[in-house]
Image (cartoon, rainbow, N blue to C red; front, top):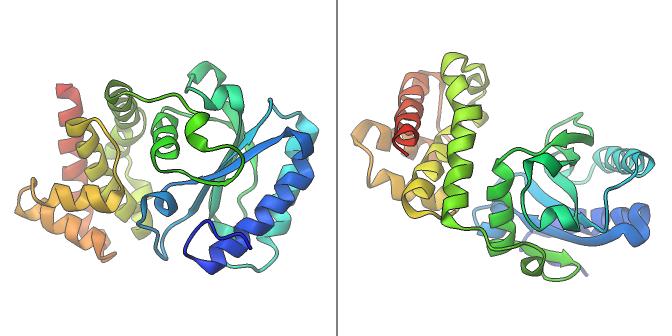
Length: 255
C-alpha cells in the first residue's frame, strides 16, 4: 500500500491520483512528487496537497484535456482532500531549472470547481523547486533530487524580491484578497518566510519562519504573527497586516 505521508486519507487520495495519472500519461509519465507543507512537516487541516508530476516531454492538448477530465472525476469522488489538490505537470527538461520563457505548464489550484489549465509559472517556482529538491517526497519515479539543479541563495533572494514586487506590493493598494481570513493568515506567514529567506538565503516552513520572526519583530507585529499561527486572524488585524507587508516591501527595496 502507498504510504508516502503519515496521513491515511492523503495516502488514499495519492494512490488514486498516481493510478489515474499513469493511466492517462502512459509512457509520458516520469514521476510523482510532493512538496509544500507535506514535505516540510507542518501539514494541518488548513493545508493543501502540493504535487508535481514530471513528464517526459511537453504534453499535447488532447492529453491535457484528458488530465483535466481526470481531475474532475477525482474532485467528484467524495474522497477526503480532493479539493485541496494543487499541482503542476512539468516536463523533465523544464523541471531541471526555472526559465520564465519556458514556464507554461498544466496546473490545477486548490478549491471547489477549480479546473486544470495551462498557465504561466511565475518566479515563485524557483522556491517550489527548492522545496522539491531539498524536502520533496518521491511517490513514484527517480529521486526528485536528481531531477533539479541546485538553487543558490542568490536565486532564492531574487525570486523573493520578484514575488514581492509583482504580487504583494500591488496588494497594498487593493487588499481585497485579504478579506478572506484564510488568505489573510497565509499572507502573514508568507511575510515571515520572505524575511527569513532574505536574511538566510534559504527556505524553511512557514511555521519555522513565523517562530523565527516572532523573535525579531516588535511587540505588535509579533503578536500578529502569533494570532496567525493560532489561526485566529480577523479583519480587525488588517491594518497591522498591511503595516507588516509595507515593512517587508521596504526591506526588499533595501536589497
